[in-house]
Image (cartoon, rainbow, N blue to C red; front, side, top):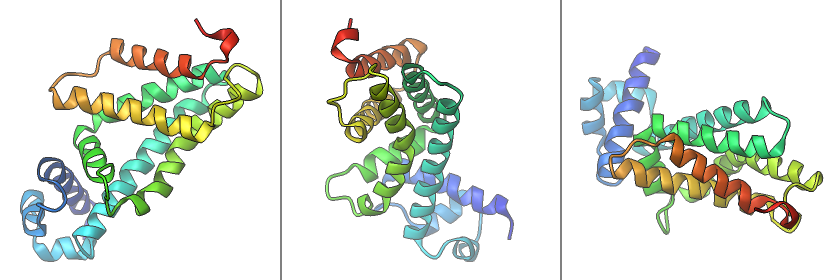
Length: 195
């Protein structure tokens, strides 16, 4: 079976999960939208849950790789934080439906996905966390800030503001990205460097 069919199933599922939510989506609907037989669906995925986990896993891997790639190009922790913010916005603007799925299904209170998602989250916030630790080490960022918690908070700031733009049907603009970069960086700066 071709990788193309698996990709078609993932693409169809992303659209359907974004529109209808995980619980309301069906394997039949996903297979129909992907233009594959139901047997082809089950050749690639054991179940709808297996498909969903694969979708989240591949999406967060792509986001992690993109953020690390942008961050690794730079040495200044302030620039790293800015690059990570920008790459996360870029990811969400290029993957609107995945953004909806991540935020609606995983961040939902009592979500059954949290346990499977959190280790993935920790991987993709690692780049931000390391930039913050580096900034604290050279006394650019406030040493009293918990790097992991700050990374999660900044991710949430970006994700929810991106989702707000997506839901409103607006394009994520450079002005929006620069404003959020400024909020993120200024929240991290040591007291002496704040403007």
